[in-house]
Length: 216
View (cartoon, one colour):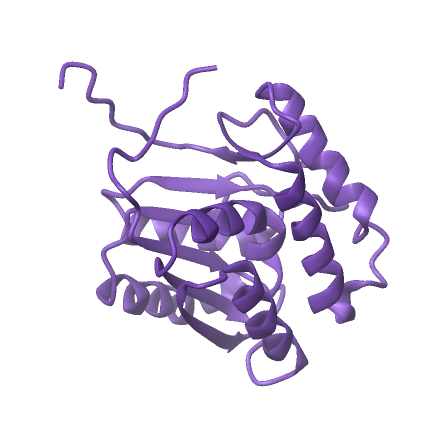
């Protein structure tokens, strides 16, 4: 495995999700790793659905726990769950507003080939707004069975992997009824991705475009 870094200390992170819990499921371990390693890091988070109710409350408590010691700035909108493609203009406006307020070192977003239309739509919007940024497309285990062959991995310590699962169970009680929302699913996927990158646990990402500097 070849390890690549951003070349400097990451000071600003952007994390986006179509739904409350997307960011935590897809990149919660990576956020924990980053925030524990770099106290005071700024995290600009955007979620397009779930605003104004129980889901937003869950998300605010969860991301505060997943970003310990960070300067967290979270916005949760009220677009309709499952119908984001029909609200393209509002979603694009939210992403562009986010872009205008930050210059991130790293962007965490859904995969552009995610089977869920809300995830996929948001991922495509991100490529139009954050053109010159390292963007990692996270994966979300679900009924659609769209997990593929990722191209980038963030190894997770056993402590971080366990903490991710604990926080997911603690902060999203509204999702516990889902048949795939359990410890075995989350830790099992992390174990498989860990095997693929010679680690105990890991989160995996898709990278659609990456510029190398092999001569410098």
